Length: 325
Image (cartoon, rainbow, N blue to C red; front, side):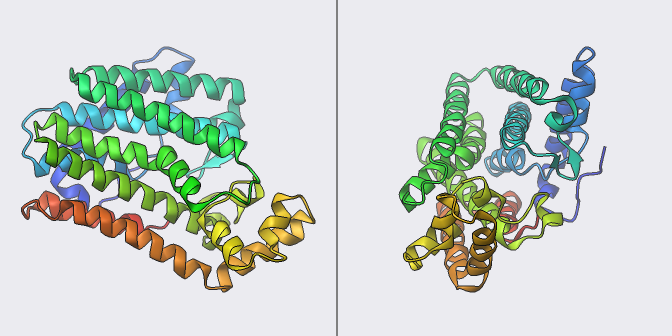
């Protein structure tokens, strides 16, 4: 397996916990029977940044948690994330994820969906091993939010009239909810008081939403090599992200985004929409929105005393805003 990137300083305080998370993920694959074993090994072979379990572990570190339950929860959070990626790739007919062929492209959508379901169930077993009913209930709520966000995205495809409020509700459910749960559960498992638990949930919610806004930026500003899919592929699939919505707001007449959604000269209008988003000043507003979300996340941590783990959380929030896929 690839060595986890060590250039990111926020890993330092939680190196032991992350190692336990990685061992848990490897055990899920190695402990399964063929043919599931080979399928799961394919999924975990390429390591992502592990941002979500890092949040759980760093929150517990800030709060001086002395149990291994945050590492168990970190594995559960990452398994749930991997399951959602498999389902997303299957729905999107994606061929590549993180530079590696997707399950659905190699074994077909039926197999991919079943592997995703297997990982959903496995993540639930890990959560139950925390033996904390509140965490288990919150995790279940998050699975509902993730599914709701995906369903909303599907049924709102090509609806260019949708509002920013609808967009933010959707991306919270799709992305922010898991970040919120990752942070909140770290606090719950550390025995924190209600005010502290809510502060970390607010941190995770805003940071996760910012993460998705940055994803939406990269869909227009990144290269196909960087993001592993064609530039503007969300809009091409009928998914209205913040850059596209702001372009519609700014230029309500003869807008190429509207034309794409209505099926009018799609290829030509796709090119025009990408060009306008990049060169109209819209992206400055999108970056500002992402920055404001990050600022709200950081503000939620303000009452907490300074520590190495808190500084690592702040560094992680910088990474979310500045990352490259």
